[in-house]
Image 1 (cartoon, helix red, strand yellow):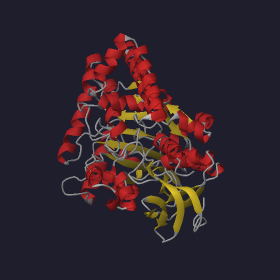
Image 2 (image 1 turned 45 degrees about the vertical axis):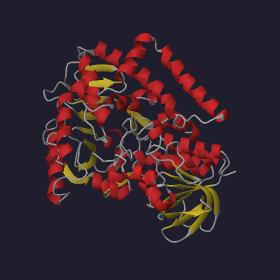
Image 3 (image 1 turned 120 degrees about the vertical axis):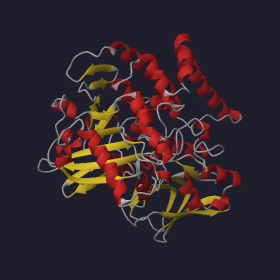
Image 4 (image 1 turned 90 degrees about the vertical axis):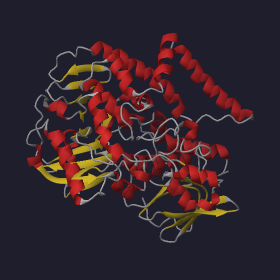
Length: 526
């Protein structure tokens, strides 16, 4: 990692941002023989998937804290397929219940935390197996640019891919194919409550379907959202040892080993053009780097601003300005003086992914206030205690509790005053303390990042973790917007390679890898 060593040099490509997508894009290009410079405005790597010092001697994940969906093609491209198995822990999920009958979900196996069988265990196994079959089918779309049907040989290749998708759909059999088509556009609440009695088990799945989205379980398309999360790695949830920042460091090492230059502490201010083509970038320091392609893992509005809106047609500008990207997730990191107790959970299950989602109905109720820019009264929360699995993150027995809070408005009434921030912190701590008596007395330090904070720190419009909603009007050939899909971003040599591009958000690396392959296929660096 360098700062300034690349000045006045020429590269085949500049990648904006050293998050997981930017690093995946850079490594893919470098392994194909291209010279690549990754430019990161902050002094640390990983973007939303990085570590931060929570207090002296205690480190934790600043934003993302778990791996759900890292794409296997990206792992192979970076040479990390075996490394990820050794450097992460697969966690079960525990849905905390107000009556103490906590439900444990490990893959497709459901049981109670005390070891007794769950009465709907067989239904759960069948339901999850079906969803994973459907998710695997949809995952075929994530490994390539969104479907496009130009003429010639490129069109034949697209038709062949779609043909394989159609064949996979047919192989499901008539019953499964009909069920897949029936539920694909449905809301997760109806699908879950057709199968299960409402409670912590369906509540967990409903919460997973809407986490990070401005949506409740009864919003259309939330079944697709859950399938998307199950698309890679069999739906397993991983805790990276060393935190998400350690994963970012390994990705950066892979990029450097492939020949990439990584520069930190000086971001891109402008994308330079010559004859309506990318010719380089100008950094915030004023230095310039010549290149033939720029791949941006920043959001689409940021990228357009860097290139100049005057180079985009009026309709493209209008569509980008109307992207739905209202962030609805906040992050609360707590430093505790010792490990908290959770009655009903043994020590092993305290290391699990813990979720507060008592029922589908309660998750829907947590969304209602956000519609009116109000704080959730009973927030839905996902949290982990990473220091229980990875003590090296803390010191002197101190523990980190890292929580994602769903359905937090971007701009609550009255704004994010200190009183509003404290109120949200108190509500989240109160929700967790209902399952862990005495938690509030263990807190040494609390750090809250609201959607507004996330926007300020990362540049993601609206503080949206996925850079844009993943509704049916903003996926595939419509992501980020109609006419701007397929990674090419209006100007020759300019590409989107972040979460706003296909297939979307989560820590997958797929948008970065796919964008790099698109740029290589276009021959702009030849």
